[in-house]
Amino acid sequence: MTFRILRLALIAAGALVISWLLMIGLTWLGTRSESFSNVVATGTAQYFSALTIGAIYALIALGYTMVYGIIELINFAHGDVFMVGAFVAYLIFTSLGFGGAIKSIPLLIGILLLGFLVTMVVLGVLGAAIERFAYRPLRNAPRLAPLITAIGVSFILQNVVQVLISNSPVPSPQLVSLEYRFTLLGASVPLLNLLIFLVAVVLMIALQVFVGGTRLGRAMRSTAQDREAAQLMGVNINATIAITFFIGSALAGAAGLIYGLYKGNIVFNLGFDAGLKAFTAAVLGGIGNTVGAALGGFAIGFIEVAAVTTGLSRWQEALVFSVLILVLVFRPAGILGQQIGERA
Amino acid sequence: MTAQPAATDDLLSMEAVDAFYGHIQALRSVTINVRRGEIVTLIGSNGAGKTTTLKTISGLVRARSGRVMFDGTDISRVDAYRLVPRGLGHAPEGRRIFSRLSVFENLQMGGFTRKRSEVNEDLARVFQLFPRLAERRAQRGGSLSGGEQQMLAIGRALMSRPKLLLLDEPSLGLSPILVQQIFSIIQEINRQGTTILLVEQNALQALNVAQRGYVLQTGRIILAESAADLAANPQVRQAYLGEI
Image (tube, each protein chain N blue to C red):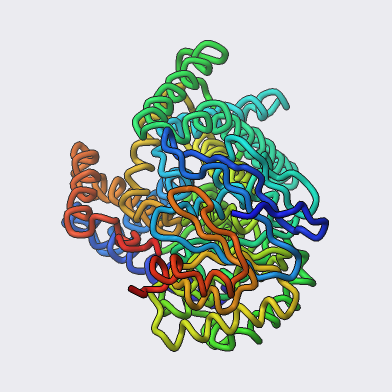
């Protein structure tokens, strides 16, 4: 277990360095006339945006992949669960009277911790409730039924937020001032970007430790592999599936909070686009694989930002999905996907 | 068949159980009993209902009528996962080990309902029965050979310290030497105090280790006798022991 985490950390560190260099190279391609130091600075700044956007996609992608892993359902409502997370965080912060940057650092940390905790718990409960009432009754129904139900839940969540909160974009409190910045290789990067990346990494490590090394994590993996055999071990399948939805939705909630802090405004249908991209990330990384989902999330964030730096911003969507198609043509199960022949 | 008297030392009894898969009736008024300390075998050809009988006991299939009594209580309506801590272990057909979990994790799953302190003790016992598993503890379950997977399936079921162990075709697909080994381990497990209900295609071996046996045909019990009588029964010899 510890060995696996160390190896993962090494691979991740390598990927971070390589993608940094790659981003600088792509920036050079996009702006050939600039001086070398300018290219490095711009590339570095873009790299940190890519990490931030990638972190959001990665956190959402984890929920898609966990749910697919355990009940083979593409939970199309998951993007909207993320959206609800953004609004729950918005409600928490505004109801506590925080509409903008918090000057006191201890207070800021306290409010952020509280925000994450409450948002994640509320969203976890929401996710488990969706599973209980919308998917569990259909667990033995033909595949298409829960899929359509998921789409239905997606629209319901959007509609509820639209009616109860706002039909138009609302400004979400940017609690972390963009004035806090650090300079690296000539690039001035908001501390918020780094913070978001670190929060995402901490959550992902926590997830890996939970799934890989705890009794409940083993129950989840066993249930994903062979539900009947897991029952014969004494695993309560319904509870395990509910926990999976809880965790996946809590992570989406954290992503929603982060999204609000980063973007500064949120709207009821923001989950559609982000959800599809995150789903793409999960498939790209290998659906059912949590490390793959994180990898796919960062990859998509990187491609989106790279499209901008190389001057192809209008081609962003086409580029993202071309990469998806290319990867799937050569590796149908995704980058880290389990090839078939897995089940004993 | 001879009616079994309802003895007080019955660990398990099925009373006139009917079970269905959709509209197809798989079990027809099946009545069997297993006393504490016994090895009882259930033999019969493919599709006779042997696996369904075990699944009905462990709660994976619901009895439509009749009842299943285990350790003094009616378990006909109890969820499968709740039966494990009550002392029912089931090593299912086809081994069904968790191929992407390590051997060690598979065994940990077997002890899922046990306290952490008890798990180590049980683990030592399983490794003593199957030293091979100790050697391969870090390997993925899916990378084991067929015989090792069978050992893992049995070891995993033992991790819950069952009072009654249901074994479904433990010898299937194994070489003759391994079959011998598995059957002697089954006897060893029984000697250590676990009651066993054994489903087998290999009727000869099964009747060798069992005290009593039932013959199942198209969902019905057609014979219920001591293992020795069954092994001597010309009808059984012809149908299940490969004699002409």
